Image (cartoon, rainbow, N blue to C red):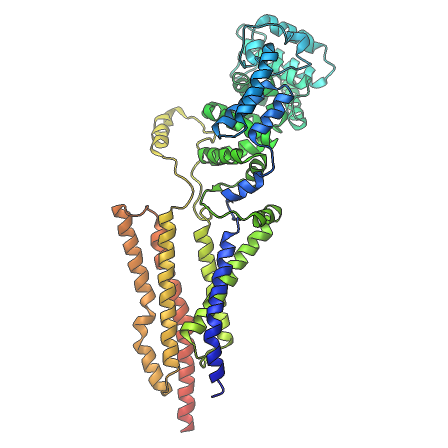
Amino acid sequence: MSRTPEAHKTPAAAPALVFAGVAIAVLAWLLPVSLKSVSRGLLRSAGAGTPSVAGFGRDLVDSEKIGPALFLLQTAKAVDDPGAPALGTAVDELSARQPALVAWGGWDASLDPLFNLRQKTTRTSSTPVLTFLVPEAARDRVRAYLANSGSLGVQTILKTRDITSTGRFVPASRAGGQPLDALILLTGLLYQGEHLSPRLQREVRSLAESSVQRNELGDLEGFYMDLLSLGRRLDWTQLAELVKRTDSVQTVSEYAHLARVAPDQLPFIYSAALLSNSSDRVSAYLIRFGKSGSEDLRLAISDGQGAVNLLLRRAVPVNRSPGPPMGAASALVLEHPRLMLAVKYAGYILGLFLLLRGLDIWVISPGGGPSAGPQQHVRAGVLAIVLSALLIVATEPFLLKAAPSSEYRVRLAIPMLATTATQTESAQTSKPVTMETSTLVSIGIFAALQVGMYMACLRKIREIETQDASPQLKLRLMENEENLFDSGLYVGMMGTAAALVLQVVGVIEPNLLAAYSSNLFGIICVALVKIRHVRGFKRRLILEGQRTAVAV
């Protein structure tokens, strides 16, 4: 009789626990933070209030940098930036006022004495810078100008012209060496005008000094080759603005590679470098993620400078799954990403714990019982942690699935394997890294089935536990329910078989994770029921039966 009031209280508390658990878990799921991805909504929040690509391009126009502004104009039009028309008008007006500077991409004080940049020219569009340096007369003027430079770095670079031990280039001092001569002079102009970033400047100078000492171009030749690729695609101002934001020769090589393998993406790649003020981060991101990374970068560019900085700083893919905007939560995630990730996972565990406790009180043992108490809290906590881990795996599309091989990675071309490599690459298709919706639905259904089986087994144990019968009779009843306690395995195997059949006939996307997750959930369910609950209950019954026999 003393337990009757408590029995009346528990049904009222149980729905409240279930509701609170569901609410906390849903709120945790809605937090726009992930372990190995960044949400689309978080990108928008990061880009809010920061310069758009068109706005940044307008700043370049105000600085009279026509060439870089043209790339940002192309990007702004491609991402449907509302400011694109205004930027186009500003570029056209500046080009009309300074038509001679369009070919060079802008005015430069260090070049004006050499080429008289404002003189009339037949070139009315952005022109690759090497076009102006290949003619012999132009190279003679630049060489004479740089010979009087007081910079030791410039003088060292000029000395590499006398090196005759080269690999891919004809020596600059011989017939046919015009390309190498032009590249040496271009490097000297960039160095003289302080257009190279400090780190890149030191690295180039070190390579030049090493080449002069050994009387062979060595690694410096690779830099000249990369500069050749960029100099044939960028005008002077575009190239100068790019290398100003580049900290290593390796990044120059990566940009040259990207310009060759993805020429149609060059405006986006260039715009991202200027928006983020770091060519190194952009090239590293694209080399790692390939075409899918290029699409993610395009999304970030459409959201503004802050979104680009966030994506490159996190260096993770974009999770394109829709989610409700959470302004305050997004601000906290941007300010404290690791803390909010911990809060999200803690919310999963707490929400599922409250949900399981409510169901335990409401469905399994509404009237309490011999096993009610601390054991229920431990059981709910362990199960909440297990289910939270499964929920994290299901809601993190990039956690278990590795990204496909990047299409932009530098590959070594081996003639003997050229045909095989071509066939292999053509056979591979670019697939999105995100987990398919059908896979998530399948995993969710299998998990729900096993949770249902778990609850049914616990309810049967409580039913036998609360019966007015001897311990020996309860033991026999428990043995009679062995098939029920093993049913999680049967359901798991049937789920795996059904998933494999559906994948073969094409109803759902082929994914072994979706199929074998059913078996995994079944094993976990049966292990929890038989080891955690059945074994303990039978042990109590055996001890109670022994005590009863001794007393008699």
